[in-house]
Length: 64
Length: 246
Image (tube, rainbow over all chains, first blue to last red):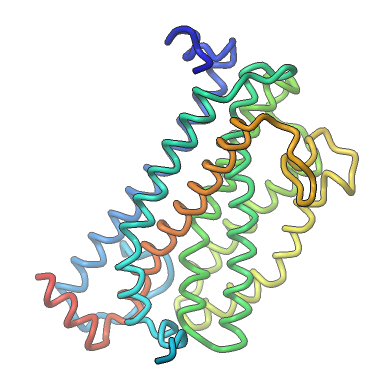
C-alpha cells in the first residue's frame, strides 16, 4: 500500500480534485448509460405488452 | 458434429446467446473495474515528474483506446452489413455507437482534467486532442443521422456509408503524435517494446483496459437485445417472449 493515511489518499499529493473528478466522471458515464438502458428497456417492454403488433421503429429511441 | 456459426446471424439465436453471456460479462466488467481502480489508485507508485496527478491515466487511456476501437468495430459491422446485407450487423453497429460516444466524451473530459495541472490549460488545439474532438462529433453525427431517417433500412445504409467514410479519422488520431509535433505524449504502450512503467502501473492499466472492453461489450450487447426486440416486434418469437413475460 502506497498511502500512509486516508487524508493523504484523498489529497492525491495536491491533485485530488483532478483525479477524483476523473473517477467521478467515469462512474457518472456508467450510471448514465445504465439508467438510459433501464429506461429504454421498461418503455420497450411496456409497449410490446400493450401493442403486440407494433411496427418496428428507428434506432436508439427505444423509449418512444 | 460441426459448429454452425452462421445461425448466430439470425436475431432469435443471437438474442438467446447474448442473454446467456450478459450476466457473466457484467460481472467480469465490475470485478475488473474494481480491481483496476484499486491497483491504480492504491498500489501503483507515484510518478517522478507528474506526482499523483498521473493516476488520471487509469481512466483516460482505456477510454481513449475504447473510443477508437469502438469506431473501428462500427466500421467493420457497417462493411459486413453492406456486403452481406445482414440486419444483425447493422443492429450491432447501432448498439455500439452510444457507448463509443460516451467513451470519447470521457476521454476528452479526463484529458482536460489531466491537462490543467500538467500543461496549465484545460484545452489546447493539439493534433491529438483536435482529432479526438472530431471523433466525438462523428459519433454525434452518426447518432443524429440514425434518428433523422424514419425507415430503419435506409437509416442502416446511410449510417454504414457514413461510418465507412469517416473511419479515416481513427488512423489520424492514432498517428497524430508521430505525424505532427504535438504537446500530447506518445503512445503509452507500443508493440514490440517493453513498457517504460512499473509493473503495478502496467497491471492497473491492463485491468482497467480489460474492464473497459468488458463494459463496452456488456452495454452494447444489452442495447442489441433491445434493438432485436424492437426490430422483430412483429415476429412470433418476440410475441411469444413478451407474452411469457406478462
